[in-house]
Length: 264
Image: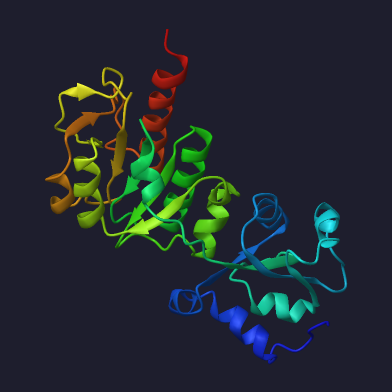
């Protein structure tokens, strides 16, 4: 059944998902755009429904999935409804409501020689999303987002992942609980420091290594710093004072990838 009015109860619930409070309360989130919906479908995300512009019809890229209505409910909606359920200046012609995944930390801790990215109070949704995307590209085993970081279900975070959000485990957790437990399992915690003596290009990233990426302005918190085993520096012969957090994380991840998969 099509939905035209923005006052429809379902539309009100969908629009609420732009707010973290309601994402937590409903245990759902919203994704927008053909590519993200396609990735969610391809990787079997728990999709409740897919709403598409009734005037434009189901996008061609998604039409093959629409035949399997047991996977998700397909709902034609008005342009006004789509506009109500987005924070974008130019709304996309389709969005989906997705139930949150109940992924836990056990798969991180149980995996031998895991490469995990840990975000400590990283507050920019774009940075968080970009790091998730880079982690996917570099073959990392997952991302742990610590409390005080941007919400991983924020629409901007999801958009910044470019679909990688559905490719690898992403878990929100209390680092003060998770990191000590990881260390007892033999994990080495690594972070960057401008005062470090060891270059990231001399460091051995093989084995179970978790890369801790700190806040954009203040770096790794004091509490987490006390748990870090090794501090390294990214050499920077130029004049820039520092690197963007997502860029620094990407450099470390791809150096780890090189050592693990491409070193002689």
